[in-house]
Image 1: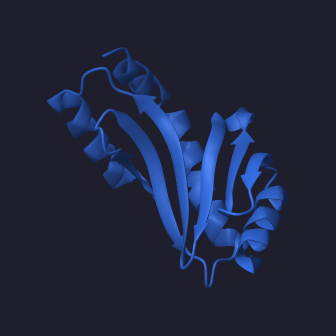
Image 2 (image 1 turned 90 degrees about the vertical axis):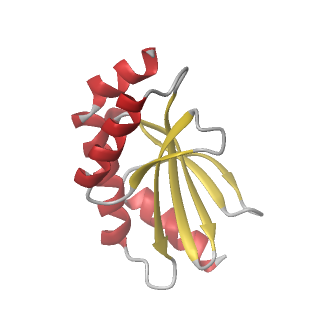
Image 3 (image 1 turned 45 degrees about the horizontal axis):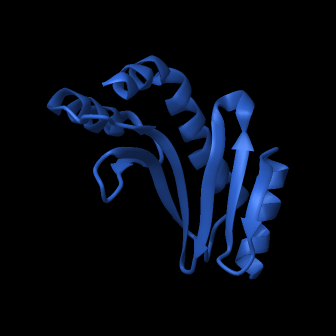
Length: 130
């Protein structure tokens, strides 16, 4: 529970709005709408912190879409695009070690996500239309 409280403190310090929390599962959903981040899931799964955001749902995944996402992964500083089990939901995902997590490390992941959304926004919109 101490790690969960520490993570929540960091999120508040970074001006993220905690929209929902599950104390038993140690999960929070946070928003920072000015950066396009809504319902970002942050899950304390000792020994790691899982950070996931649903980016878009694909009606039909094409080779070009998947290739573009994989190429973009190379540019992402922290985290990566991943697919869910169905292969239709594209998520941003990063994992961090809880044991030595600090504010700067969490901030770096969240900044990476915000930068990704701002730089790749138009392409993501196009992908969601397919």
